[in-house]
Length: 275
Image (cartoon, rainbow, N blue to C red):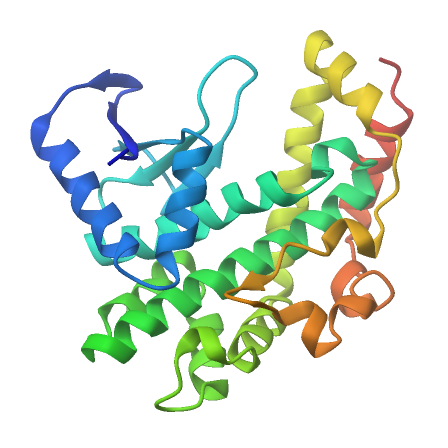
């Protein structure tokens, strides 16, 4: 069967360390053997994603794409495997999002890009919390739930657990996914972090003539609820749609408001800067 591509990054150089390839295999296998993980691993295979271990990371995981290179998920080699299983679930959910969406944040005006990124991140966090909870359900092992703390998302895991129905399959109940999604927005510092990261990426695009030309041609649409219709699928349900949350995603200040004044100024500067 086709396998996720592997690599190992140390000081930005790719090597063929067998032990690290085995470690990636083990992480992917744990995720693939879960009901939550198997679908996103399949999206990773379809997208031909490469998974690499990186010794020099501040976060647990990171998904990136380039114009010429393969999509890559970098995992922090300094963290234990339980953390990296949860991180891989989160980042592969982003792969799925990018494949089912008609537009990406980079194809929207800056403030809409910020709003969409918040929603995508909240969904990926709810998904990884669901993955950790499924493993706990099946094994009684809390290390995957505890691993959410390394993503600074322990509160999201706690919200998921509090809303879950004991004995009910994680993919049969949308309530904990809704609770985890909602919890993502309860930490202003988390929102501000991703808002600023989105603007930083936008600035990088604007400073590159080729990328600016490509993305400027796309950045005409305004964000609509219909653009978000497929991001929250779990099994045969869509938890944001079925719960009624989706209809408020772009109208409630809870989800799309409270953009800090400094971020708003940066976004406005990008919006009006000449290409």
